[in-house]
Length: 281
Image (cartoon, rainbow, N blue to C red):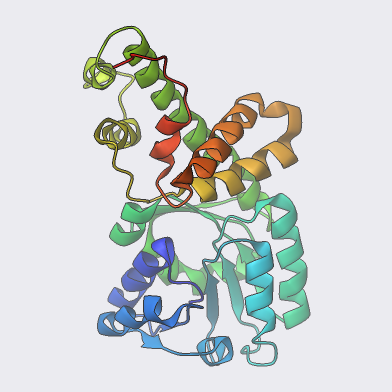
């Protein structure tokens, strides 16, 4: 496994807990070190991580990072190994990584995941998988360890397209919650009263409740960071164009939140990018 950050660490722990032999690498070694206690072998180089592995799983920032890391291990991959690429890299990025995999002699499976830090830790991610049929058997135990469900979508690249549609929903819903709470405040109500009103009704969801609670508390421990939202919303706007007018607005709000110092905070910090009239509660 290459990349043991917010998402990767939880995924790695569940893979190790399932009894699968696991070697991990991270560019910042101290972030990978605790995984030794979970049963993973922690190594210092990408080549040492991938040598002999039948599956190479990447959970890194973007396509450029994935390509750079993989090419650092050129010549160390086992013949016929599967590249299980779970990062959100966009449509063009997924296509480029398919070419990189071919250059390195890897079978390529494009498989971004739905879920954030907590589902990654609990092994309840939804895996969107696309790639060759013959790779499914070797990946089945990995998917069982990291997720509650796997959705196969055909040829590699289809999963990255669906991931953008899903992330547009996640980001726009978060912005909508921030706006509704701001509207409540602008109209003289406590913003949290909006959350109380929808509690237990058809508009409530675990996601809305979780993001709303962070906004009400003004505390934003990251499970999906604002800067990650900027990256992913940028993919949506660039690759879906006119089909994504709401995401274009949300992208502007995410950029504003990042510029205000919330780039490493959870996307619930969108609350700080929604203007509130003077004197609003």
